[in-house]
Length: 422
Image (cartoon, rainbow, N blue to C red; front, side, top):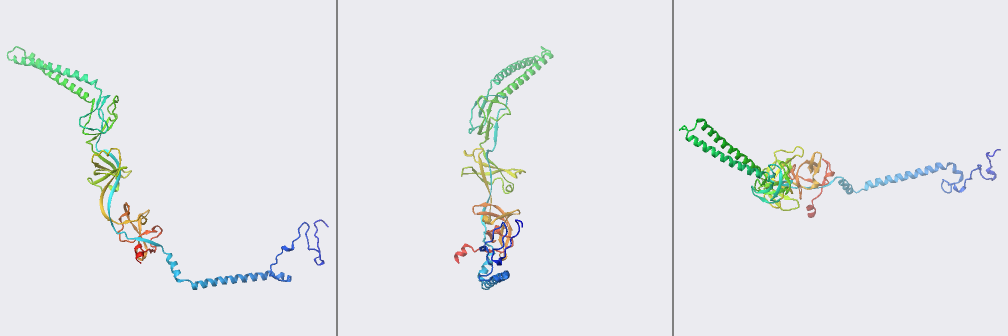
């Protein structure tokens, strides 16, 4: 026999059970009997069937017990609790009937304070060096008042020379005129020929024309000399001063001064396209500067003739009374009262919006939800102003409107007044 041959032992001879070479013997205490306690060894062949029957019977009994419990609870359930559960499935909402309130409609806009007529002032003549500046920004000036002076060292001698030339031309013209008069006096006596008399007459006319030429040249030089003097073209307030002594000024360059003609001030702003239709020239307006609670009274002076196709805004100008606090360039906010009307006012939670626009939910017949499209006119501390779509007598959902669907049935929560009196 080889080393892997099986070694059989007769169990009836009292020897140990069969063992395989290289394997551990099975321990007797690891065998767990599946049958009930006290079962004899000779029934081990049919034990599996007995255990299956016993388990099936236990499961059937448990199922019958559960079914019986369910049927018993179904017959003994509280009908009041069932009704309450059914009611809780219907949404509970709060409503409001807003009525109407007096609402003042205003149009608001922003802009800047500006001079009504902002006049840039520069030089009109030839370029030159500034030799004097006589005003500062904020000064009130009169028409013709000297603001600055350009170097006149070139033009003043020319004016003097042309003035002397004019006097010389006048003297020559007077002499020629006297000679012509004497020749004309002796013409009848035949002392001078007709040709000589005609020459003297022509010389007299020539010298008179030379006087006019000299006078014109002098006037031109004086005008150029006067252009070296920068003066105020009208009464007003100096807004800015760019002129400095020693600076070279030239025509077409940066303005030396900016003048508010007459000191008139206005606000320039822009309003939305839909608000232009309700505004008219002459309406009263209030203007407030940033950081100041003081209102400045004004009136609508001008409305733009066109609407910007990009921004959809139009120009508006508000005339204001002169005030030291109204400085051009300051940012301001204006408002114009356009109308008074009776409008419903709703809480912000009651107004919803989607792709179709703003809307509210109204409780209709049978306590079912109905959608109502509205038009919003603005907001105030009390809520949202509704300009179209409601009369104020409807029952409008104020709470949980965002979780409802059109046509859904709801329960209306009692008002706090009704709860207090009950």
